[in-house]
Length: 169
Figure (cartoon, rainbow, N blue to C red):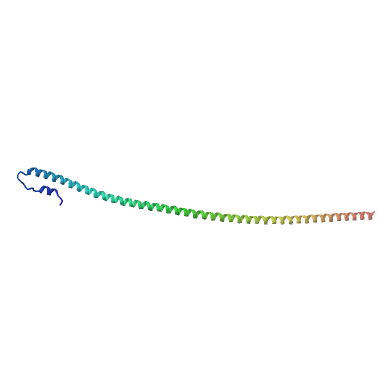
């Protein structure tokens, strides 16, 4: 059975001959009850403080768990973002490489086409030079023929003059 301060104060003792001084017993019981009551109050306050601290501890434990979960989630998101960024960078790099290869292929095709055009232009130039030379040689031959014809005619005219002057003589 638990004792309360009231139990201590209301406790009655039997008196015997030459027993205890009732006044001292009562004074002591009042003092003990007062001290016991103070201890009960202090114990109650300590229990309240313990309960409050227990609640705070539980709340802090819950916050710690939430923070741990948040940090784990943030770390996972960071890793996912890194992985995603790497994949995106690889895709961009592959696309750039493909684009560069296509540009090189286009450039090679253009160089080949320009080379073909240069060969064609050289061929046309050679044909043009040949036809200009042929035309020039034809004109020179015509000039030579015309000069020879003019010389022959001049020779004939001189022969005619000579014959005409001889006949007159």
